[in-house]
Image 1 (cartoon, chains in turn blue, yellow):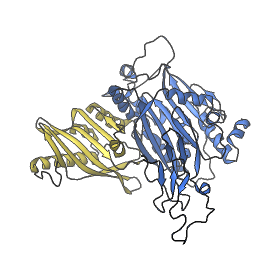
Image 2: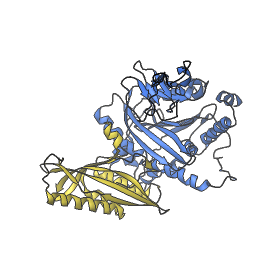
Image 3: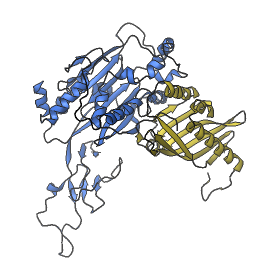
Length: 360
Length: 165
């Protein structure tokens, strides 16, 4: 659970009572008027930082029962996470002594989080999907530049073709994180909306959009980057796809079950019309997204296909067998997928993130 | 509003008409006659599929958001020709409608629905449960949806959503 105190301090703790292990907070979100969290089972109560502040009948009743005089409140708090945030995006770690967030993410990744969250945001809603597959299959998917135009056929089917794109893929030093970005070259051309261009280019596909507003793009930033998908290890994606802004949290439920939680947002200063435009653009992404729904199916067919195939290996050598910090253009490679596995195996073999970095 | 302590008078003819409309709507989707699905709407309709948690929190983010009939047509063309998804049957079970208000030509109504889904493994699962919140109007005398919001309780979408609710 993540809490924000009245003074803005963020705290996070594992939602597991120190007494019997019951879930202390039973709502997905909300406010605690007095800043305390009380386990309903035996009413142990905690402050917003997870510190134990009260147990009923501590001294027993009429000399019977209770806890000994040396009962140590400090030893019975909730398990705390280390919390750090960048421009309002909050990260937590269960590690005792994690590297700083800046160090863990690296300069390029941090700069992009700040770029997308450059002004105050407002949450527009949530969408949740459950995939019958291991979380790592989704981690691979969001780092897989190769499948984009092959699995997701919406753009080619509707003949939406953007000839003047520049793309690149950045991977951090450890291989954990990656970022795809697509932009127009910085030439002296008025930035026209995708819809105008799309209408012009239609005919390349086999179908025509009745209402092209769904793909219209209005630059939110002056840097010309129209698509940015940033996968941060282990479990979150931050995206800007046209005017859709969202995070995707990857929540492993079981070895073959993963929740993907989308949080859609816009900027606080969006007017009603801009918000409506974003809502229309959201048709592209999410569990029903024109260019994203297939990812759920991809995760599931791989999970289904690899069941019982423990002696077999997948083949991830598109565009080489190494991990490069920069790959451009993107699409003909699996560079970031290899990065993910390098980082993951490094951790599983017991290398701390800093050591993994040194090994590079 | 047909609240227990309010006016329980029901326009039975109108109610029957709306129930028949909803029944035809559900069967059209379940019979895979998806090309006819946009015909249930007006030209400048609004259709969305949105999580109840968002509606309750006053958040507008929807997983499908269409503010023209053209966008409904695009959804179906994409489903047929572009999108990739598990093969499935849909089965709509739609409860009787509740008329929530009549304002000139516009009729407010809502109805509970359950959409069951059966995939290639033959298991039938509850895919999506929720309610339709609707505004009907008449076009050449016939009911059409000016607005349909599918507000879903099942806020964990299994795999993906491609077929309209």
